[in-house]
Length: 221
Image (cartoon, rainbow, N blue to C red; front, side, top):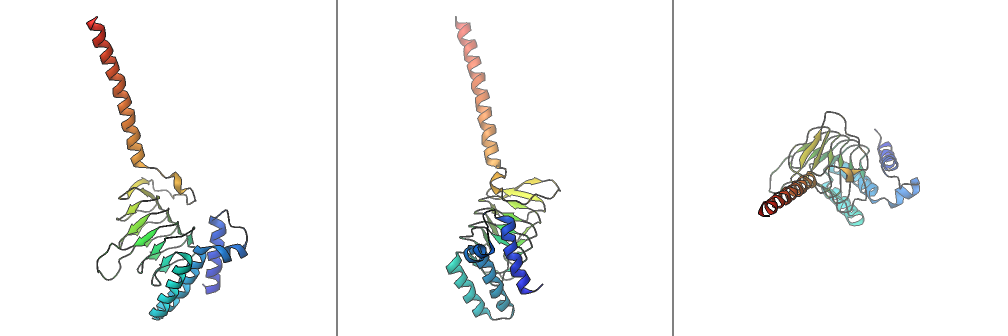
């Protein structure tokens, strides 16, 4: 695929994913996520040719203007969409497939230490990673999966799964393709579900206690 065609696909995915996008002129001039991706594609080309210093300079200039930090060594596929993007961090050995969407404050990072080699996540095709999620270490997020807002993922995620919580837990895996859309705020929250069950149980105990107290008072009479 030619470089120009790749850049054109980066624009097209903005219109597919963001209903606020109106014109090509507006998107090219005002979308920081798009600017960060384009800068990365240039920086990555230099990185592959072993112009490491120049690649890092381009990366840091892009970070200064967009608030998005993508290491020039990261491998990113086609139709990658960063919505808003402020605070996004993508590490050096990260590999991102095609049709991936991420939101602001997402981190695709390592787990610390001085280990060499692959130390950042691999994100397969059609994955959605919602606001503030942290995906850490040399793990794989299977294709067509969703990572819920604020989740911290430290283990591999199977394909067609939905993950929420800290640490991230798979809460949906039905073997069917998960629909990839912008409704990342509608993902299930297992903590809220547990709290709701506890509340129902407390209400049930209160009713039983009142019945017992009513029976005791009646016997006293």
